[in-house]
Image (cartoon, rainbow, N blue to C red; front, side, top):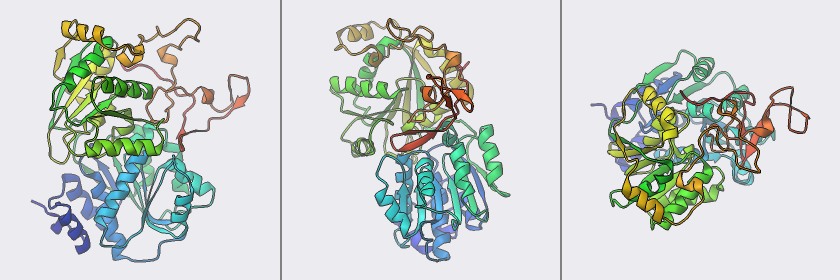
Length: 472
């Protein structure tokens, strides 16, 4: 069996790994590290929770320490692009942990916080910069940062970058860089746009794939619970009556839904917190810290937490709403059964979510075991006795095409819905201000161009004319 000591890593790195209790690399680490150390570009395909961060962090730390040079002013020697702030923070923490005996400078750049500390960190130069694309472009445009001297580029969770509309800004960032650099490209799936980007960026890459695309973690026990939309809240409370549901991630489709589900759990006596793109950075970090510390049993999240957030000992993942994008199902349940542990994943499926379930089972190439809880008398009684909440918090989403309410503008039919991302990056959010694309007109009849959408300190680039249709 391969050990970290067999991979040619520097002794200070091995000391740090030993202190963390790591002796045996994961498959992607064992295959990727030697190739990166040799200077090759890398294309890594691996599902979430397989140890991708260490697969690039360890060899980067080794290469930078083995070739010491001053960090470029306003620049960095290695740049890691991350889709979300939380993942950027986690990646930077991993670099600091593994490189604690090397004395290299590591910093993060992301939206939702003030520019001052980031400008100061960039001004003296960095060995490693971990950044989200939108805020990094801000610094490039304001001349706070330059990437001419960057030696290594890492694109992490590339397919989620695509989901969030980050493909144009990634290309813009790359245009600021010297062509002579090492490129490391990691993704859980390989859709056509990501494959094209990889082809443009990588030169004769070493290809490492440790799991088929869109497969689910082997150690996760999965179950579908068919239930009426209006009884989801009662079913969730029933699950939490089991003490084994001690550290649970609950996923909702919308930000408002996350807040309401968290409040309903609190009403039932379950400590809960919500995390999504409308929360400030400090609120998001406090909620995540409370969940990691065990101060709350439930963290209710949109898909902003579906990838890359490494929380130890998540016992269960509950999908209160099935995701619109079937691949997100895989990333959600990957939050449990990490680091060799086992875990459980439960997904609620209402009648109007059957098409979404079929799409998930097609993508994952499996039939997920199911239990029918429809017409359950106990759930009916619990729902009737529950404190009143707005309909959406009880899972009572109007059926598609039937969402018009008196006095409100009728919703567009599903085939006309925008696929533009909102601040969480979940598809289907409104992009009214950006419809029409180049040469189009807004609601006031003024000409508009497709341009970045800003929110909560981070840019989301909107494909203004991309159609959306329900999954078949």
